[in-house]
Image (cartoon, rainbow, N blue to C red; front, side):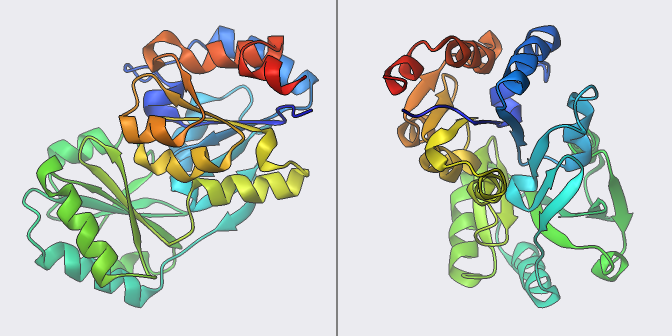
Length: 278
């Protein structure tokens, strides 16, 4: 018999609706049931840790985070893992971004202490990014962030240039940087292997949980490894087809509180969870 022992949720387009909100009362009632059954709750997102904690003020010290697409893993405020690029790899990637043909490209460098932007970065885009990065600092050169552990580039560009950029990263920086896209012109460059599935794997090992006992939800390309790895993987109804193809099941749309609906089914032993319990 397979039972769920971990619930892992992506945030934007998955746990959150299009207004970046969720039904807190409904979720907290479900969270109490999860806790009573010993089921772990994990936030697995490409967003900054300091932004993610703002969504869960009541329970943030009780849960785990796979933040920055898996670059930084924390369990009940304890750091389990923090990846980092080498300085030479950072310099090489910046050279590619500055000299490649990617019209309208904008990017941040993300680290444990803060996210960073350079002087010439577009202010309108920065205003939007401040919703995702609650710690954001301007630097004149990469040397000003040398004391931080830098583990992600957050890029934004026209959809027309996403595939060429990702191909260039794969060709020029194989083994040093990996590109993953969450849609809408957003691309993250991460340390290869430091993805969400890696983070969930570390937590599962810590808690003595198998991948078959993980219920995971996602809607973007940065969720693919996590969905393929998890025994109960749900793509959101609003996810693109390649994400739905990676998941075992389909959840309702994020605007219909699809994650909460499926968690309720799981707690009630309904749907695919009834079959697994036989």
